[in-house]
Image 1 (cartoon, rainbow, N blue to C red):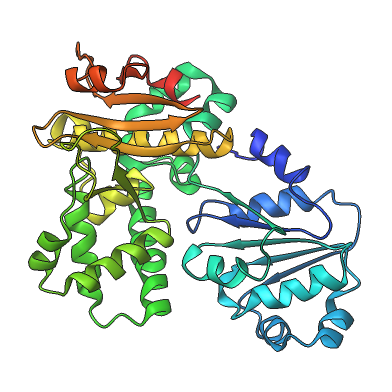
Image 2: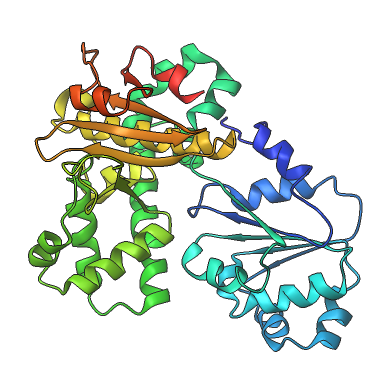
Amino acid sequence: MIDRWFIRFYEELAGSLIQPGKVLVLYGPRRVGKTELVRAMISNFKGKVYCGTGDNQELRALLESQQLHRISALLGGYDLIFIDEAQRIPQIGYGLKLIVDFHPDISIIVTGSSSLDLSNKIGEPLTGRNKIRALYPISVLELYHQFGGMEVTNMLEQLILFGSYPDVLNAKIKEDKVEYLLTIRDSYMLKDILEMENIRNPSKLSELLKLLAFQIGHEVSLNELSNSLGIARQSVERYLDMLEKTFIIKRVGGFSRNLRSEITKTARFYFYDNGIRNAIINNFNLIDQRNDIGMLWENFLFMERIKKQEYKRLFSNNYFWRTYNRQEIDLVEERDGRLFGYEFKWKKHKVSAPKIWKETYVNSEFNVISKDNFLEFLI
């Protein structure tokens, strides 16, 4: 059985992040275990706990009302308040602000599967009084601590093909993994966006995802997407923004500091989970039967690195780097005043840093990440 409650992130949640007078916001995709994580964390909490959800009409009406006397009467007696799927409560930030202002001894935790709504509703009212953390599908870092390096290496092809949602990892056979991923694709992922945003052409959203799935590791032209889909560029930008804020795709910009030849006006998009990407194109063929292993490997490594940055609190600006004469680096991390370049290769290759990169960024580092050394990169 795959667990995720042992990681240091959990210990931090249970300790320094839960503070009286503060709101802890836990973001992440649906079905990755946010609710279970918080419930496990607060199971030993010393004090009176209220657990609610954004689907509860009475709770929604209470916090929407922004009436201090009502909120104090119903929630003021708790030591900790936990609200799941909080993005479904309009103006929740102002309701929580009243609690924080007038009941500073109460700790608050809210979770959400959409930063699209929740960040807007909480951000301004609670500036300086909220802490934000993200929870993703299970990371290689977690698997390593639970099972060790040899087992993670044995799991590698399964992770690349089916991703790392908890229920997928716990499924025993391929058919169950695929069925679960298709359910996520059809019943949770797109449905949430369609409900929230009242999109007129849902088929265009699915088509957009398929186009992105075949362009991992390549710069994406919004004009080309617009032409392919037959919709306005502004609509493409809006759809991409929604997909990113609901934790389906992640946008990465180009790095540039010194050269006119560096590409900065386009972006690359990665999927938060390889299994979801493969569900979108409905392809779960084995690795030796695929022609997209390079894309899958790059997507896997990029997102696992993002998870590591989040859980180990490695503060980094992330980019790709490419010039107009096609010299490129898959991932550039800018942290601690230095540049770290990484090139992702499924099979080990003797690849050196692009000449112009070495000449321009003299003190930067460059490494090739393959099957032989991926574990050191991700733990």
